[in-house]
Amino acid sequence: MRRARQRITTALTTIALAGQPLVASADSVIATEGEMVVTLLGTGTPAPLLDRFGYATLVSAGEQVLLFDVGRGAVQRLWQVGLLPGEVDEVFLTHYHSDHLISLPDLWLTSWLPPYGAKSDPLRITGPAGVRALTEGLSAAFAADIAIRIEDQNLPPAGVAWDVTEFTEDGVVYDENGITVTAFTVNHGEKIEPAVGYKITYGGHTVVLSGDTKKEAAVIEAATGADLLVHQVAMAAGAIADTPPVVAIMGHHTSPVEAGEGFAAAAPGLAVYSHIVRLGPPTAADISLEALIAQTRESYDGPLEVGADLMTITIGDEITVGTADTR
Image (cartoon, rainbow, N blue to C red; front, side):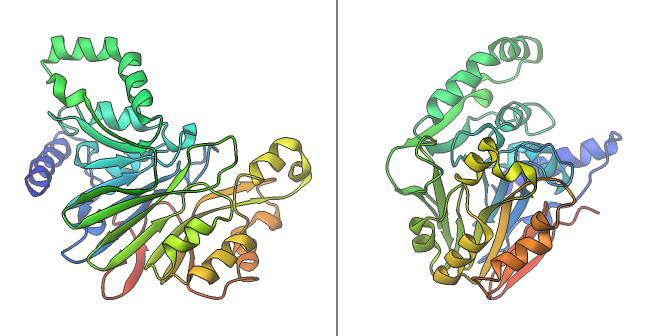
């Protein structure tokens, strides 16, 4: 990874000199030895908002850069924090709703292109049953583009291949450079299967990503005593709150009070909301961020943050929250 970062840093400098300004240094999102850095690239939902891009969470530790889900705008957010698509060492998917993977083809193909990664090796991707079919489908969908670029630009075919790990049971799915990633099944609804969360451990630190889920005992178990729990949440207000589509959506997610109950049971060092679903009139007080906090406080009084795009959480001797350096 160190040699890759040197190569890509050179590429970024070249792009900047060519008149495409480098927006940020990656220093704020890359962990130093013994630390973990979690960056909320996107904290949103299918809603095409400019302040909350689609769900994507970056975890840096042990000279590895791991990306969990690839929602809308993930590649742009990587660029904002000074990373190119080719710097992602592995992608992990929680489930197959489009808002969690719509930028996967962008990440995959753009990382192949010079100077945005110039990958000459396959993109590594891990997910529950279905990930192999997904990658095969993307390869078929973009076959014409791939063939043209191989012939016209002499790009290496291996750089647009996939290295797929597909699992069907809970357990360890990644174990490299001191980082262990464990998948666990969550409940996103009986018709939305498979759906998983992930527990990431490194250097005595633990981060848990709930994935999309109702209140779920497996999340509480994985997050008990963790340094950080990143959890989704959903709220609805106004006339649409009682409509069948919104009732169905709310039935697939965790309410603030339910999430707070889970936080209280797990007692993580810090609980952070991401994938924040707010359905109703934009000005409705019942779905404001203030209401989100207030409702959570009905069942939880511990450390809490409402996630925002480009928020960073550094886990070392202490847990610190900041914003990725995008100056």
